[in-house]
Image 1 (cartoon, rainbow, N blue to C red):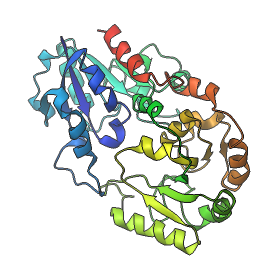
Image 2 (image 1 turned 135 degrees about the vertical axis):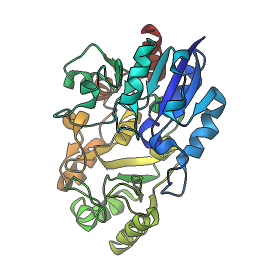
Image 3 (image 1 turned 180 degrees about the vertical axis):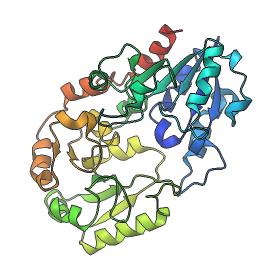
Image 4 (image 1 turned 30 degrees about the vertical axis):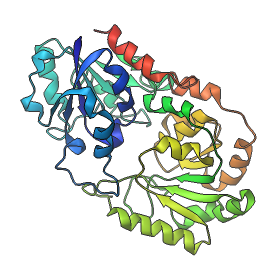
Length: 349
């Protein structure tokens, strides 16, 4: 059996591909190399340490776990799969590892960092032959945006395959912001009083008779924009109460597929999390100005803040957007990204 080294930089980044591990273990003996936020010495800023969730799910599949990239005997491996395509020196040492891999003729795979606009510095392209030999993208739109380079592979989003096991229960309107008003960040649209008033969130709650649930994006405190997690939760709880909105706040969650499946509708920034609700056919509105637009630029539910009520009403009347899904997520229509992803690795060894 061939040997594969999985490079894990952080749960928030790698969660899209980690679910391939059980199926991958049928084809490879897997070792794990952790660095950056997946190492145990990094502070956890949240109520759930997702590293614990990761090890509870996957530890039994690893023949060996390395904490230091310098301690690895790379000569034993046939391939390396990183959960990212970036490098940050010793923090994310993918560029430092690459020469060792090439010394032993190891094939190296990277993974797309996320949904973004492909202008300027594009890690998925610029890091070819310095971080990876091949890089997995979500789907055809990303590959076209990156000029259809041969080393770019389509792997979908394997974590979304499990959505086929969930049933929609229409319990709440789910809000997925990127930044909130008490954070510092690069995008002008943030979740706060202005956001709530412009989308008429109180009126939406009255119209549809659904509770509001706000899903905050976890931030690591070492980033300049990060706050202690309870500060963010308290801010949103007070914000909802001040605007007479019945709702809850979620920050850390073990099963985001379950969270999505329970939604009556989703209003969010252009986050990869919103791909899940689109795949399930849940009415989804994505808002300009809160994050990179990326693959959502041609999405039928993309709009300005003030347009949210009208666009949501339209989305509630439309069927699952299969053309969008097919173009954006390889294997997304039939929830079979995992098999496509693994097949691509095997074919290149």
